[in-house]
Image (cartoon, rainbow, N blue to C red):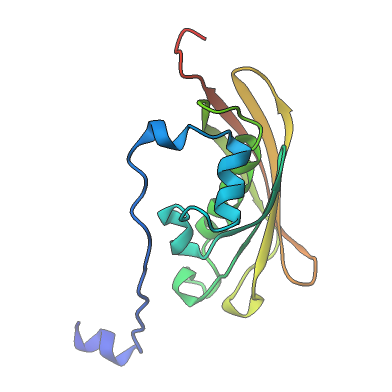
Length: 173
């Protein structure tokens, strides 16, 4: 640590997470909805990315998910507010998990694109934020979802629209 850093009030944050499941066959034994419910109920450990931003699934149903996250100073950008990547990560997770909740066992997804609109800033004083994601259309090979992030007062802070590729176990499909 340099003298300059000591003078600037350097803080630290310890990140703890479970090793990700490496057995992909095991991951896909359950439907997407079953996988997400197991995460929400604490029956399986959350993915490592969730530890970075304090992201937790609050509820999940077919085609819809609710999540919360805790912004703090470690998420700040150079202008003193939470970095847009924090918003984008939460929104991408909400859209993707909404799509994931519609998938049968053995089928996966990946984000193809996401458009994020930043409406209001988040700071460490914002407290817990809630993201809601929902599927707007699901086809055989692609799905579309929207999401929003709200503060404790219900104000919309950011929105997103996403396209996801549905990944079938048989590439010929």
